[in-house]
Image 1 (spheres, helix red, strand yellow):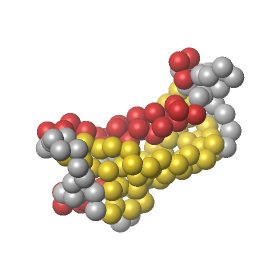
Image 2: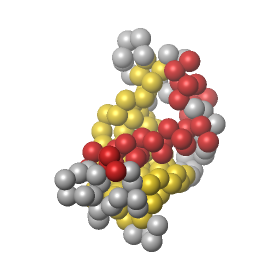
Image 3: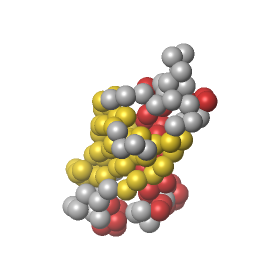
Image 4: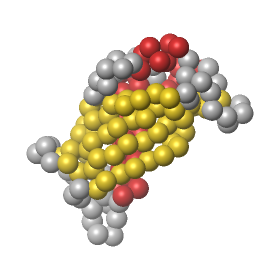
Length: 135
């Protein structure tokens, strides 16, 4: 697996902020998920709808975030993700969130599990998905 990195840009919105006027920790997972959703279509050529059409979906099994510094209202930032490993029905995705000055905001990883939408049970990764995700 090549572990190609893909980057998506975002901007902090007013509803992302907490009482301390910086991005609430729960929003960082939203940022990673939004980046992955976009990258599935634009970078891997397999949008979420392609999985849904097969009766498959992704669930977050594990998420690990290391927070380095806060983001504030209106700040622009980039979310870079890459697939570190695929094991059975699990895809381990690493990420980094950087401010426009290149300083790290958050680093971490998530494990996403491919599941059947009918049963809710894990499904083995289809060969064509493995091929597309091995870039």
